Length: 324
Ligand code: FAQ
Image 1 (cartoon, helix red, strand yellow):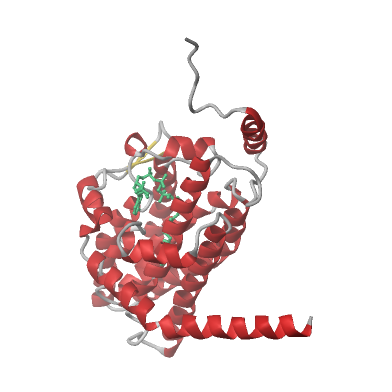
Image 2: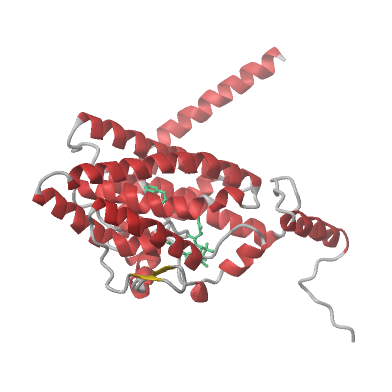
């Protein structure tokens, strides 16, 4: 009896698959109405929605400090930054919706714990230096990860990333500038910065995901052009970019294994605590429960706004129908 490869597409699907593969190999964009393998669609929905959730949950750790920012200038900067994160979430949910999923459904998956968001937002912000360190390290890591995504193969995701990266770059600079000012301040302020760097360094390295050897999605995502670089390659790039910035700032990085390697032309560095990472992405990080509970409460409180917006849109739709 002849064997058939049950995974190989047949007939028209095979032609579509060839077109799809050719486009991806030529680094052309796949658009929402183009044929795409189901696994490609699912991977994009997973990654884009987790990314969107991260932006929205990521408003919380810094948002906590808006009311107690140390000056009007810092308050205005922080408000603008947190508001930008909301915008990023919206662009990303809109990109995910072009793949046939509904934003309301994605929000439910998040608040019911069926979808992840970035591990980094499950750590507490203990003082104002944390705001600066989030800008410098967390937005710095986000930029490293996301600039290559401007070339990702799915058009709406790539286009959303261009605008997001421009804003992330402002976020990173505001964080670094805040830390520079604090480092020019008192001994106590310098100690606050060092303490915040010590707490955020390892979680920032974890943002890039598990080591390549333990990353189930990387290989396929690279083949589909969804990911452009591996988790480890981006982590290395981040370390190499950040070390000179730390030197300029005058802070130490809490890794005794961190050293320049002449032969490799980059830094050697220690392993993050991958058990801690697994705990955090399984919902057991220091702030997971609080973050989700707050998101759920905000969603419930916002129900009347969604209802009013739908009623308004319906009213305008029926008015248009009458005049046509
Ligand atoms: N946290 O096979 P891989 C920001 C999960 S936005 C939680 O390597 P993949 C802006 C992964 O989902 C930050 N989960 O997965 C901002 C998978 O689980 P699943 C968000 C993680 O997708 C700044 C499993 O582990 N950025 O910071 C994490 O190929 C300041 C196996 O992992 C993005 O989302 C993690 N760190 O690679 C906002 C960028 N890492 O779904 C506010 C786009 C891995 O199978 C303030 N995303 N997992 O159950 C990506 O580049 C990729 O999705 C990775 C993960 C690199 C995050």
